[in-house]
Length: 135
Image 1 (cartoon, rainbow, N blue to C red):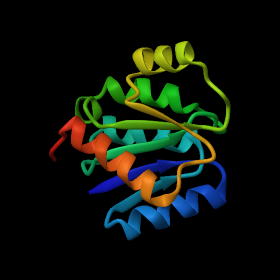
Image 2 (image 1 turned 90 degrees about the vertical axis):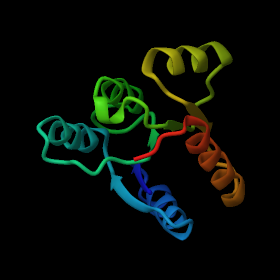
Image 3 (image 1 turned 60 degrees about the vertical axis):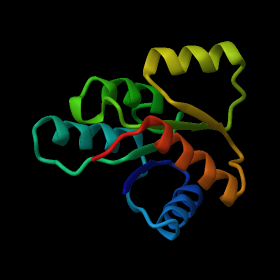
């Protein structure tokens, strides 16, 4: 499985990248929302055919925000059913979480600091399993 990670904080991005690889996943990492947006341009033009099985993104990044990227991903056939998990250090109330999930096609929102490694692994794998996406 390939997992896409988009996080502007280098320490968090590198840690997530390493953890996902330890769990047996290849990773595709981006440090800004704009770089993910540019990658999506390539997906739309057919330049990228290997799509991720999970998307894990920070909400607030330079350039495009995670929720904006999630909305665009939901418009693309190849990513329409891909599980999308957003991360945020900001407190969201239940209404804000529900609206973001409904309006942007997000499957789950994780608060920062992130859960410990084992809890995070369990959460992310459960989301992938529940979505039932097979490539």
